[in-house]
Amino acid sequence: MPDAISQSPHEADHIVPLQHLGKTEIKNLALACFECNRHKGPNIGSYDAESGELVRLFHPRRDLWAVHFALVDGAIRPKTAIGRVTIRVLAINREMQVEKRRMAAELGLIVL
Ligand SMILES: [Zn+2]
Image 1: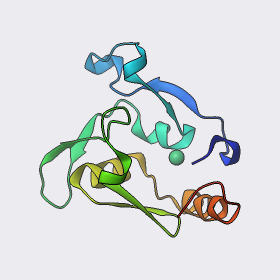
Image 2: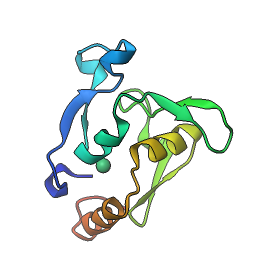
Image 3: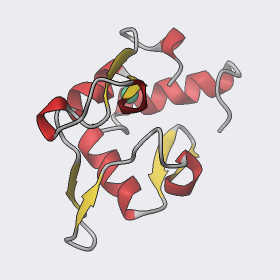
Image 4: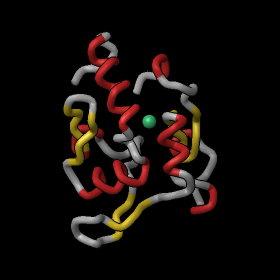
């Protein structure tokens, strides 16, 4: 989601929270969508609804977005278990977010 069309400015936050021994260093910081980051909170993973396995969240500095996700008509769809748990924990496909992505595509701000 481009910062320019987000309801609140993006924020820098820990990828692995301090609570889980993450450090305040550039390789552990990411610019995050404010709303999705509220849902992420201190989480670093969750149980995958499909397999029941404990799966870590997507790591924006180590993982490749296109390996784990696809953008389909404004919705982010998972390609992997990491994609599934990240989408669910961060509640990435809230109706308003999907609509904003569709609008961003119409404005040429993102490519669907
Ligand atoms: Zn978001």
